[in-house]
Image 1 (cartoon, rainbow, N blue to C red):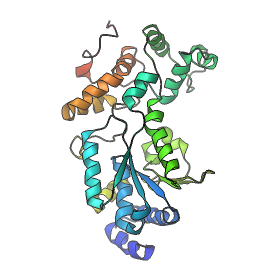
Image 2: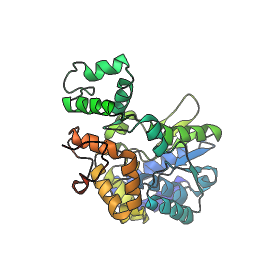
Image 3: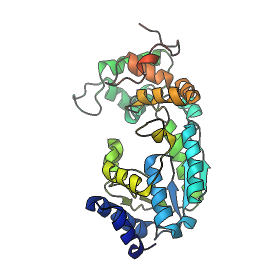
Image 4: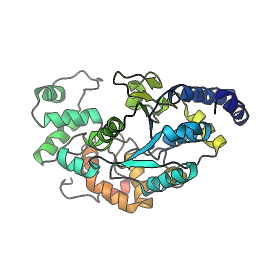
Length: 324
């Protein structure tokens, strides 16, 4: 479908000029970037952002579907709702979603350590535990308050407690379970465009990592984020106008976003765990087994404003950590 064909369709569906302008611009960019590449790879997470991209490509540019690879990265810890939703997407759009897997989150955390606080701090602690001087200086040294390298007395106490009790800390599960598998897939399959569902409106580190929806890389594997500039309002209008149904994580469980199941980095992890307990209890147990010490260490030493564990589960975890 070219602009002359989708323009009147969008004009009718989106009476709000701001919604129309943003979505029409996205379609033009899809023509420009996906249309000009030979082997695009579209990451399908089962989340709402990737749903929007799958719908855009399949409904407005069906001529591109055959050359696109749709790929899901299985970390070994996934919502049953996500798995069901992938089957639904395949049926609705007539596509095949390839499932790829690297080292599971379970084995990665056992080998390297549990993630805690955030990725950069977990990496600092990983090297601190191995005696790297730069990490020792960063964590124990006097740092200017307000910098991203500031470590509170509570954080330092937590780190020392973990070391004394043989608790390993690292942020390697993301690399081993998600980043490395997709990099390997892209290389092995000659992919020339990596299409992802990142949005600036999500905030966090992603918002500062990218300046544009398209990034040209020297290795010839370019990156394209079709809905990078979409606000939450535009995304909601698109869902309503197109009649999109998200996975049960959103539609039934009431989650605001998905991401890596049980990841201790999530600011709303306590809410996510409560949701898991109520809707997917086996996944809840699995996340407790994998990340339980990270949740409890963070809460025990008051290392962040929001607790990791729901109030009803403060006293249900492992005995490895003594309670005051």
